Amino acid sequence: MLYTKHAQKGTRPTPKQLSEVFKRLFSSYHNIFIVIDALDECASSDPAALELVSALQALGSNVRLLITSRTSTNFESFFKDAVRIDVVANDEDVRLYLERNVPTHSRLARHIRADPKLQDDIVTSIAQSAQGMFLLAALNLDFLSRKLTRRDVRSSLSILPKTLDATYEQALERIRTQAEEDVELAETIILWILCARRPLDVHELQHMYAIHLLTRDEGPNAEAILLEDDDLPPEDIITGVCGSFIVVDSTSKTVRLVHYTAQDYLNRTFGGHLHEPRMELTRISLEYLQLLNFEEGPALSDSVMVERLANFPFLDYAAKYWGAELQALQIEEIWEPVNRFLSNDVAVSVASQTWSLPRQRYAYWSNEFPKGVPAIVLASSFQMPNGLERVVGKGNDIEGHGSDKETALIRSARLGHEDNITALLQLGADVAATDIAGETAIDVATIAGKASAVKALIDGGANWQYRDCAAADRLRS
Image 1 (cartoon, rainbow, N blue to C red):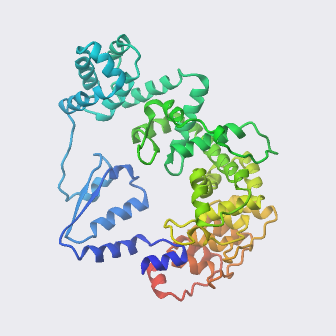
Image 2: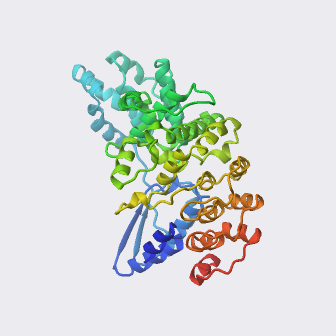
Image 3: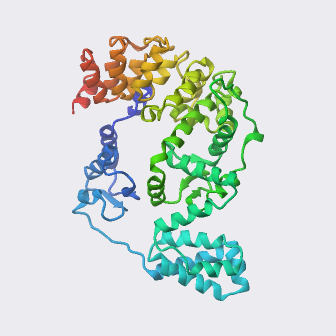
């Protein structure tokens, strides 16, 4: 029932609704066990994380929680009465890890066969430098596994870094000793992974870097390109040049930074320049959506859509995040490719279809998207009030809509983009406009539980007399 209601409206359940569902579900069982790993990797100031913690505490007495987290995090105060077990690695644990893993590295195994004592020396040196940190031990082991000769291995044992920052600095220095093209590739990939709005896989990175190479020297009158297999860099080169900074999931091919401490280090090291990779992610997304490979427009069947997503793996990210950085960037030069994209009706329709794809796949799942969605409505999918002013200034009809009659104001309300709402109302958007279901912006904001959007609409003159009392009550609560 809950799924059907939200699926029809294109909305998601609120945390409170989900909590109520889980309570009813859990009441049917004697014991429920929930394991949450690495809670500390959520920001303690994140409202979603705080809601999660509160919801967990409100579950019934038959629910057993196991939560892992670093010590000294702000979440500890939420679990003062919980049983606490401190797990601290010691040198012996690290030695056992090393004894099992040193022989798995082919180069080291070859060196050890020629000099069996070398394994004990490696284990002892790494264990001493790691000071009980498995991550540091793993990184130092990776460092030694890349050494060409036994002499190189032995000479490196005395200079193993004893802190993570020193290890990451050493790893970055090693990257910068590669060939110039490999250095550019490695730093570009690492910073994209750092700045991306969601995890990227190897195939996406291949396509991204191909577009980066094909379009980086083009000027304002750049033409759309046809992407071919010959343009793609090999995946083993993309991952190989990045050294110890990344890990690749063998099943999903997702590429991640080796640890959250690597993310912290990179943020501190490159923090003043991260607008550059964010702008490049935006530019590449815009170029990708305009590929000549999509010149026929939206996919006309589920099978064609499946094939398109398989052959062009970056399409999903490009469609869902092309506008995510625009408000924060505030860089004038990015608007040339944005304007070129928004004036390309075929590209807008391709992006609109992909942006609208449901998570679940069923009959005709790829063609339930609204047809004829104009640029201004697509742009309102992202929180960018300044950008919407530019789009309207280019002559786009502020009341423009597709087959679902959803205007930019209604979409902004559905997604909870209160800054968009304020900007659109100031630009003259009709607060009483209705979509194909006869619902106004404040109606859809109420259904979606977007309190800040409802407030912005009321401040802009909307009349809140929503007919679904249950939805209104949930919002008031």
